[in-house]
Image: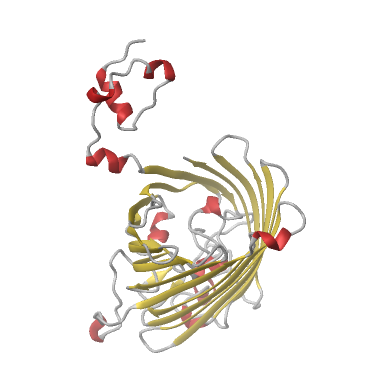
Length: 407
């Protein structure tokens, strides 16, 4: 087959590939198209993403007060498009001075929660820079994912489709400067300065000054330490311990939690491998303390345990047990038990158990069947009913099928 000079030009730019027989037809090197700076930059760019869909059934009548964990609202008893994600990025290279970027957008109902202010689609957009200090000091400048927590905003990277109560407490995005340093194979340090601790709109500022104005010196601090077991630890190799804390001003509503003034978050987590091949345990603890504009203090915590077992290359089972407790003035879990407009009669306490069966039959597709049970352990009705604020049940059961295509 004869090919023209335009095909050779695309091949030289790295946009198409040629078989050995076609390469033999290539003109001599002096006449081959030269790469422009733009083509050189684009050649290292990658495009990835996913489409997340689900079908949910909540047995029983009345969905006026669904369990208020992240992404659950509005998905009862029907089919759902959850979110579509598209990421364009250029990773850092191994050179001493290296630069890259990430640009990620989300579309769909879940995107407005990930964004933190209902102004989707921008999720992440940041520049990455490497400075030749020690093993390499990396900086992210712009909008980036929260670094604390056992679970992520991407369901395909979590053991379960539904999010934990701990994830519901956490922010999703920050805008600021994050520094990361890999101090050997077992220790990673991360610390940063951000506009707000709670997730707000892109470039949102704190609003804790007089008349809800910004205090220019009021910024948040985020941090995380990761310890990873070395190969010499036998079956424990690759196990990890995490510890981190955030402190600073909040902004607006993040999931079910409202923080306007000062906020402190503490996170501890672990992923532990076992002598049984492909059997892993995990644990996480999150706590949040804050104060609203009226000076009322609030507190919420969540503790979670995980078990993951990969039966075959395609089949795995994942389980999660959790407990959460939130005070009345933090806004956490207060809505369903509050009546319209007021705090609940007592601090909400919820026990949850989730089981997930995952079987990946098709290439690039994650398919799951999940059952979740949430129980009000404080003796108050939090769920069910047909009117918001007038809950009628202490137990909420969810059965879901989840299909995600990743590219």
